[in-house]
Length: 376
Image (tube, rainbow, N blue to C red):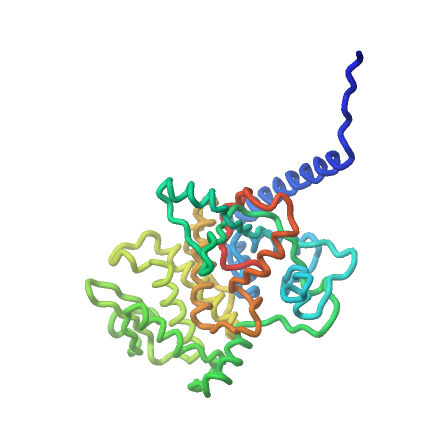
């Protein structure tokens, strides 16, 4: 009897085609990421340009997604402003929550989104038997845990129609909070942000005394500001004769040194150029996000630059983005009325974005740069 050869079904053929498309897309994403890193490592001007883009987004994206979105936007010739997924069918998340809808035929932007799964009781028992702790929800079920990353769809504001929408900003959120918390202490002069006192408070919370001192006195030398960590002494000093806007920027710069870990080893300067590049970049991102658009200057030009070291620049960029996000979170109270605002976790948006991809899990982030603080 002749053996019949089973032909692949149309469904299997389509699934194989989609898998091939995903593989090709992932390969392109990795190549684009490496290309952008290589250019940043070779030219300090590319670093400055990158940091300026990051400042425009308010540091709400991880390094991998930041580059991924910028590359896609450049290919389409658009200046991106704000991204969200479609949203859940009940209208509780994404663009649907804002009564806006993606136009038919619009091509989605891709980002890496975390995918979370709830272990079964059998899996939880196996983890406990292996000596691993299994977190549980208040109802006793094993908690959701990160299972991998998947490419998810998100759409830019220009791809949508519907109710008027103003991209939420950190400036706006701070203003709404002030209306609730009472009148702010007003600053005079050229600083429009109102964050000076908050930045000084963050210095105090980190264990540093703060003082305005005459130029050239104390530890200042020829600088406008300095952070000192010697023995039990922790001080930040800033010149007392500089304009309010510069004073705020200098305080942000010194706080960035502390948050980036530059003071963790007193007396040790691992790479002065890199430390100044990181601190200045963080200050630029933070202050632009709160309404003070400083020049996109960076001490990248004294970094050396990086002698083409992509890993070094990647680590530098991750440090800058992580630190800027942390400071912005500390400066900006959460707004329960706008859960999908920049740089804060929105689990519903994560879930709805991740559900749009397949396979939904067990996929590492190929760039190694995803940070769970954000998903558009």
